[in-house]
Image (cartoon, rainbow over all chains, first blue to last red; front, side, top):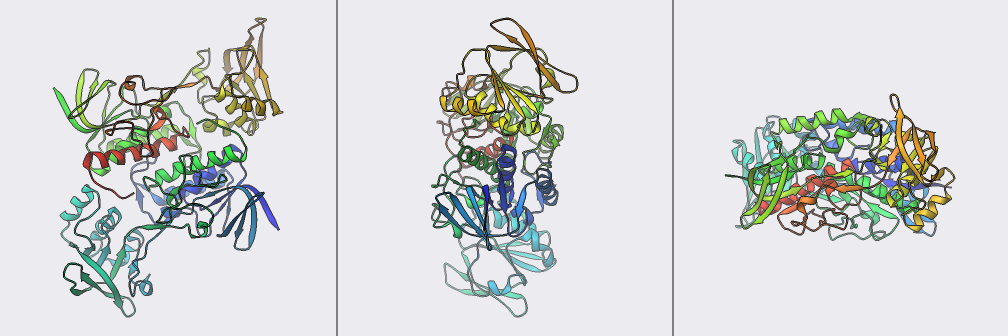
Length: 310
Length: 310
């Protein structure tokens, strides 16, 4: 038993939802597959200052309510299942979502990205017990405690700044001799009295019993090891796209991001990609929202066989 | 006397403002030149249903207030003058804004575009109340209603096709005896049961009380007038980018839209373009906002000579 829909959208983050809004409004019949919750990375955010249209400092939870108003107000269909498999066939695409089968004429992939793991001993054992990938989500649990942030980019510095208002002491641990973060972030960072930056340092192990108690770090110049006693480790070394199940379907770059053209078409003419799963110049909420709209209109053009000018 | 700033942004619509927000947050010193009012095309809109992040049916005036909160909250500098002239010199770019001179290291052009007006009685009175210039933007509001599209080119036919999936009935009204649109578009057009084409017809007046209720059209052969009762009028007689003053500065396409790469860089390495003035796949608020962000980060990379992660 197979249900036919014109367009499948994988992912209920802001890219997938924007695609669904534009698909609906163009008259395309579409369904969104989202195995967890609507909102994507917004679920991990606190307030938003760089999304024009929203007021300065809008809370992420208000935006989630707004997204929900679009889902219900425009009657967007969200299927709370994860797509496990996509196959091309001569009628279109066959999607398997946890045992349910769908046949679609087109597919928009908006599957997002996930935080990268350090891959060191103890990391996996202490997730939720001192190891975190999101300061805004978990920082509060480390009030007055000592924590480390691992990384040297914007996200790592932002997390260190956020945590410095909550924790007793923040170590920023970076394996290189300089940070990649924006200058205004670095300036702020260096002004904080409770942040200590450890350059040329590589985390070797996360240790503890019930919860994190320390990390071992190695000086990459001297090879010497030392132990830092602390209670929290925030890993901020980037994100990897959630595109594994599409690896035999569409072209990806060396990091696994899906490659598209300007109209967000992949190497398959009936598949488009948008948001964090895509190779793109700027990974932001506003760019993801825009890409969802473009992908939907590209899908409309292909599926309805009609051109619509911009 | 010449004032030096790192970045000039021409245009205070959503693209220019998004650029200013991202420039500010990256530490770039920038000024926005906007000779009329902040908000661009938002000033002509009523409510917005396709900008994810905003709640369904958000009033354009609320969005304008939100934009203003960003301008004041982030201390963005808006210069209420129109840039008349831009010249490249060896230090950067010289901008003349109604007699004031600025020297910048980079320039973001977000000067927008204008829909051509029909210039008939009632047209201006009913903008946002039944008169529209964009089917993808506003078509959804006319679900199950009767609408007219005015024009005979590709854009007019595309809009009529788009609307025929949504509206009850679509009149395509053209003043000549044949269409200028591409043949495959015309073929599709003639196949639609709910589209009626009125050739040799000129719109004389848009009528209504609170919203559009009818249009008066004249048969250009017989001179006879008739009234068509309908709820929507889509005027599709062309759009022109506001790029005349840049014609000797940057490359434009045959219609005057500025050509850029994926990072929104023009043929000049210190000039970027975003929003409606740019040749782009989808002309929408959300895409303009996204492009402003991308242009600003591209400018940051160029002007500060620094890498920033996406």
